[in-house]
Image 1 (cartoon, rainbow, N blue to C red):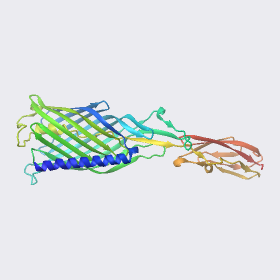
Image 2 (tube, rainbow, N blue to C red):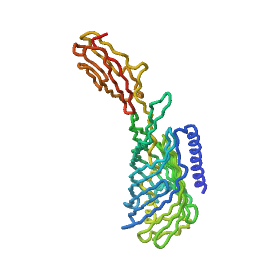
Image 3 (tube, helix red, strand yellow):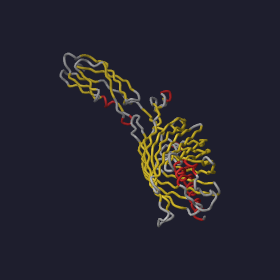
Length: 434
């Protein structure tokens, strides 16, 4: 009892500390944070145990005004101590993203697949408080979202008269692995999972000068499953990851029927987004129903008994009802670019004079423009006389002064473009005359 109270106090301390730190960080960096305060969600978990007591399948569905999820998991017991499960999910959310022009809500989507292996230690293990060893991995992909052309913004200020603001949602490709062990809390069959993980998230930022943004690192998970009193259980999870922190609490009440096991619960969770990932909070209700072989409770002990009991069929259903892969939020961030067209250096391109027959003509247009953020610039030139050529790959006008092209000034038009905008100018070219 004392150990369980200590664990609960420890977990709540971690949560409160992280919440405080996150709030301070959000206040100091308001331009980087966006959050949704409330996602009401209804969750349904169906777990049929089929074919035999060695196999089970679960379906998890979530739905609310701004999110939905479809998740399936297939689990199998290979022998008394080895079991596996694999699964996949599709998640859609309408999250709040912050841009320089303000907050906006957009629907984003993500699919993921993953698997988990669990080894159950024998009851006669020398460390009887060790329950299991677990190893899992996942791969996920969130789709990027190009905003409509009407959502591009053009600002007109004295210093930024030609600036354009382009915005999009950058999705991510992510993967991770996790290894951990569960231990007995010594009170009322409770278990505590301690795990370490490594995650890699690659946000697909591809507009203009941005490269993909990759973040990766080591994290950890603490998860507590604690029966409290007759038919009532508490599940608490805290995850520290490089892309986000996640905390969830679930109170669950269960009972047995002739056709299976019914569970009713309420839950709340919160995602602390990092690196421009939105924060979000979800609360909701959960209903779960497990059914199948022998109605799941052959040789099952009284759920209100104080002694722990183990039933292969019940235990498999409980294990499979927890998804093989579950990513709490779509991994996508706001991506925006302030875009500037090439800037003509003060004074523009001066008149060019090449008075002597046979003089080489050499004009480098790059010397007369500034290129914001090192953008790749292309030039277009018109009005050149015969014998004078222009290389668009280098921006150089070249040739020789001859009798054929000698003459008074010619007006040469120049357009410089960088994919964001263009700048037009002109200059006078004098060949064979002063």
